[in-house]
Length: 580
Ligand code: ADP
Ligand code: MG
Image (cartoon, rainbow, N blue to C red; front, top):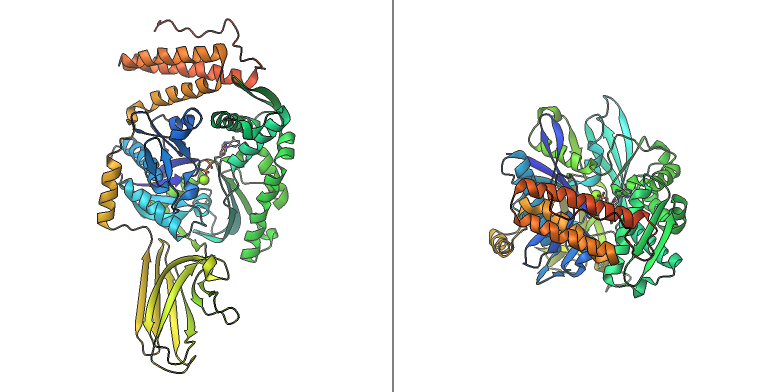
């Protein structure tokens, strides 16, 4: 049975598989590789995933959501229509849909996956990712750090060659920067850093706000739908600016109507702070690794936002290095996950490839703070950026006379005080009575590549206490109950995905146009609906093609024409009469 590799992104997700001696990307129901990480609830209560759900962020904002990966492992809940979902449940819908696409593509059941996660993902976020997979019927073979995945997707390093690469992964919501060492067949992450609140959508927001400012609109006065549309237009223009210049951005509805010409130079000026923020994590990885930037061999730029020429040249100038061209920004991480899945299946070609990971955060225990007794200090045992698997020991002693036991609390994080770090669990150990400081306790932490963490404490008599944290595992009962709940929800049928995407796109265009254009979009939607009821597959495929072409025209019109009053030109009517 095949193991698939999954890049479960904040903005887009995709799956890959090792087959026929190479890594293949898996297309979704609509034939695309990228599936937007968006979920929407339909009026009949069924769940939509992907492009159609992304379109509905504009037309049905209160029933649609994206970007929930940022909230993995938190208690945040998302009300969508009549339901309320946790981030891991939303992720499970996405994973379920990727799994179904893979099953269709491979013609066999898929129950195992390698899933990539940001290197800085902490224990709780990794656990939530594993639970999401379990809820989607997938067992996680390995959680792979995204930079390792990106690095392994490129060329293999030649014999006796050693390379230091910087992976600059700039996605929709986050920037992840990592230093990766490649020595012959071993790929290891040396240091990671990043900004969890810097990504493509910050550019969209900055563009939308600057647009408002220059066109005399007040962002705060706009409706949710108007803002959604502005962000949508901003993203379109940003993407267009990656391949052409200048680009016209315009919006028009019942209340507002404005347009503006955008150039790269304008973008640099309006998003200056965003550009400057990109360099902080780059500096930090070199500092953390204790390496000078001059030792860098390769600059690997991945993630959709790395396609922006302004971003590429800014980072390239900062590091005085051209990015390696071999990496396709959108798909490199999924390819890496697919290669790792191949390694798990013992593919011949990958036999000598070894991927090592690092622990992206510090793990430690609490100790008394002599100066401020109320504030316990964190004593690190496994330090951030240690290579996994790792096992380290710390030696501690009693602090009170005749102390009969110690309570050892385990924390994760980089802060000096325990209270500012994340509490993971505790263990208790008895100690023989003696004056303060005379009894010692040895604490050993062991952490492996799959997130299995074990802590063991031993006193001077050889007595032991242990704590095992296996991230993400639910008991069978928990899993059964949650699966039953989720199974009551119907995922939108896969066969209808392509049609649903066309309607969702039409509904979005309807929501953001006015006048004649809106009227015609409405007509096209009606016509398309009647074609769907014929249940004639050829006819429906034709109708889909035609509706798509028409919506492309509307989109191009919104994009390019000066469109002050929402007028739709004469003579461009879609042929709506049934002539198929
Ligand atoms: P994530 O890792 O967050 O899932 P991706 O790596 O898929 O995200 O990147 C998504 C981001 O990339 C979005 O903000 C999108 O607007 C942006 N993006 C995609 N293609 C381009 C392009 N050609 N030019 C500029 N930005 C792009
Ligand atoms: Mg990504």
